[in-house]
Each structure stands twice: as C-alpha cells, then as structure tokens.
Image 1 (cartoon, rainbow, N blue to C red):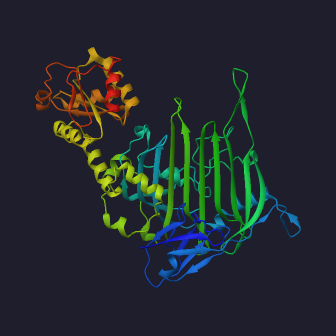
Image 2: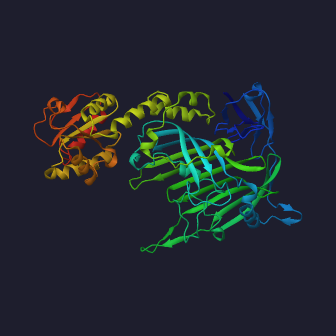
Image 3: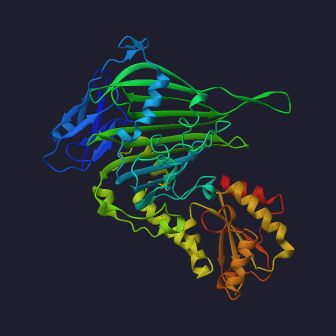
Length: 527
C-alpha cells in the first residue's frame, strides 16, 4: 500500500477526483477531495495519472508517488469554431448518446468498487458505511437500464460501518448502492418522457426529456491528450399555479457534460437539482481501458429539510478499483437487505491491504466522533453485536436487555415499559410512546419488556400494532422474569426511567400520556 497527494503545479492546490490507473491493468484508484490517494501495487509498476484540464503524467517509482504535480492545460473559452462552424451543443449531445455502444463496453464484465457513505442531521454526523461492491453487467453498456440490478448482478463482499444515530435511521436503506450506481448517466436513464421534472428520481432524464433542456458549449478543455467539449445544460424553468393564486417553482436541474470531440464519449457528467430548500449534486467520471470507457468515480451528495426545519444531508462515493472480463467471474445476486448484510464476515486483512478511497481529515473526524475515538473496524464489531442483540428479542430477552443496559452506560437514557399483549387498557400510552420515541431518539431509548410466555402471540401483537416502528427495542422476558423482580414490577403497565449511568431515576416513572414525562427527559438530557 502506497499513499500520495496530487496537486496543481501552478497553484499548489489539491487536484480532486483525478484518475490513477496501473498501466497494463484495469486496476486503479482516485484522489479524494483533498487530492490524496492510496493504492495497492507490486513493483515494477507504472501509474498513469489523468484529470480533465491537465496533462497526462506517468509515474514509475514509489519516490515519485508521495508528491505528484499535474500541469494544467489552458481551456479555450466561448466563441468556439471548429472547421469554420460554430459548435452545435445539441448535436454534440445527440451524438454522445448515439455513440454509447461504440465508446463503452457492450460485453459482459465485472467491475469492483469501493463504497463510502455518510450522513448527518443538521451539524451532527449520524452514520458511516464502507463496503466492497461487485457489479456483474450481463450486457455491458449494450442497452440503457432504468434501475440498478435490472440487468446486472450486485453483491457486497466486504462491509464495515458505525451505528446509525440519525433521526431517520429507521427510514434509511441498509445500504444505498443502487442510489449511487444510478449516478451513471451512461448506463441509466428514465424510460419515458415525463410531464414534469422529478427532484427525487435517482436516474437521469436527460435523454428521454431531451427537448426540455437548453444546451450550450462553453469551451474546449483536454483529457488524456484529447480535446473535450464542455457542454452546459439547464432544464427549462417551470412553475405551477396554486389554489392561493401564487406560482410555485417546480424542481430545477442544470449541469455540465464533458464529451470528447473525436468519438463523442462522456468522460465526466455533473448534475445539480434543486427544489425549495432541497438539493442534490451528482458527479460521474469515466476513464479508458482497452479502447473502451468505464466509470471510475461516482459522487452523490444532497441536503433536505423536514417540515420542522431540521436538516439532513448525505454523501455517497463509489470508486472503481478493477475491471475484469473473465466469464468465470460471473455471479448472480442482488443488493442485500439488513439481515443479509449482517451475515457478511468481517475480514481485517482486506481493510489493511486493499485499495480503498483515502479518507480526508473531515472523514477521519467523522469516524472518530461516531465511535467516541474508536476505529471504524471496532465500531463495526460494536454495530454487529448491537444488531445481533436486537434481531430476535423473543429469545433470551432478559440476557439481551442486560447487555443493552450495560452497553448504554454513558450513552443512552433508557425508558422501560413493562407490558403484555393484553394491553387494550393502555393502548393510548403505547401509541404515545412511539411518538415520543420519534421525537427523542438518540437521546432516550424506549425499551418494551413483555411479560408474555407465548412467543408467537407476542410477535403477532408487535406486527399488528407496529411496535417495531421507529426503532423501539422489544424484548420478551416472560412471566417469571428475574428482571421484573429486580425492578419490583407487580402490576402492568409499569414505566421506569434509567439515567445514562444505568441508575434508576424513577422506579414509577410517568406514563407517556403525562406531559410532565418530557420534563424528566429534558432534565436527564441536561445532566
């Protein structure tokens, strides 16, 4: 494993998202936003460094890797004339879409990626996930897809992550691989013309709604010795008349496409969408290998605002590390769900020796903050234990609660509800508990402890009344529980409040229907 930094030779500033490929192979990596990279190599080697707007550079020794300077090339701006004809941006775009099968592989191939994803609520980071993602494209780029996994196999071979502490943890996909794969404008396009631009669509509509966009060629730059058109686009503005007589601005989209002047290949795409206070930015990069282009780096990030003015933002990156055309590499699979992800064994050797996207100082701080200073590998072990502890609360519920209580010390306030499936008389309190949990999650953890002996009936009740909602923790401890004796539970429902240190704050805590309960929460949160 070697590490290096790439900077602009004239300004000294870092060069983000430059392509670093091992000459003679499909292996490679990319720089992060700080111009830093790490890559696994064997000597002798040659690295080819390419980036839009810079001269290509070949590096042959480890001594050169540490500090690499790229020489910028002058971009020709506006009033471009090629063969005495002004560049027709719309015509360039049509040719680029028509030439996809000529510029990108139409044969089956395997592409191996590194995935990183983090998000935050307002200014507090809530989760971070890293993974090794394999994609087998059965048809290559022979045809355009509408969604990830439609004509390809996907698998997660390695995974590590923190706990999810965000407000919308329960609404999060276990892993957002489909979202970031669909940043590939070349491979994914919406299937039919749309009446209005959708802010929430994860695939581009540029090809299907071509006539609803304005295009302009703003200049010519260079990539790997080739001239490249710089095409700006913008969706035609649209608004809708509301019942109040005002016009509401619909979602807007604009971006830039970099297209080679000789073969009309997309080598970079950038799309920015806005809708009120919400925005997303998607960037895709492509590099050539064996006369065909393949994606090497996708970035998608966005910000949204809830009705109560709380902000949520995310950042996802997918970086190619290798491409293989060997038919023996073919596999079948789809993006795994939460339970399947838990079955992926942790391989410490992979994380020490494989090419991954270099972390920035910001990302190092996120990892440290999320885990209280623990490494992401140690955080994953904790995440795995935590998730396994919650998987089936009907088995060994008392032991699992004791683990949770110990794990919560110094981190979580616990609000315990002792109950049974025959709870019609306090149904309102159970519903209000769900609302309070949604309001105070990550600050107060709601734990439902059922004194039922019938596991089947208990599970049916949880399902019927949606008591798993919002991440409320459920354990079945049975009618002869020592835990009930410890907390002197003689009648149910019984509500108990524990401090972050695990001590009993109130053995007869207020019900969720009592407005004063929130004052107790706020007091303990303040302490």
